[in-house]
Amino acid sequence: MKIALPSRDNMIDSHFGHCEYFTVYTVSVENREIIAEETVPSPVGCGCKSSIAQTLAAKGVTLMLAGNMGQGAVNVLNNSGIEVLRGCSGEIKTVALHWLGGTLADSGEACAAHDHACHGH
Image (cartoon, rainbow, N blue to C red):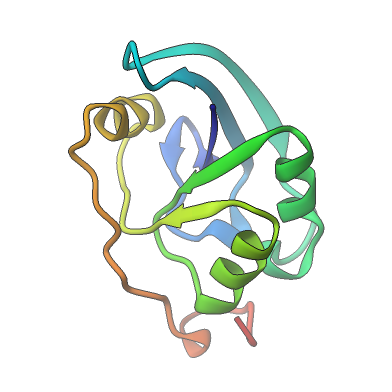
């Protein structure tokens, strides 16, 4: 299984649409371990209006562990077969390991479009 985390300096970027890059982990859910890691460059501009969902889906990503994200971005990712878990923060590997350990839950909170420059989420 592959999971993606919007990243900046090895931390969860609090804004999916403006992250520096995406960290993609190949994980073994059964063994609760990270098997491989790769970095996917973030597209220029707002992530929700880019092709990042299709790019990550083509790489086999099925889950996004994110900080804040508007509902429009969640819908775009879901339409590409990527489940989204919002409300994550901290060092990316630690977040991934917490998810593997079953200790993360979606915050259910979407950021409001007026809170940032990527309007129309």
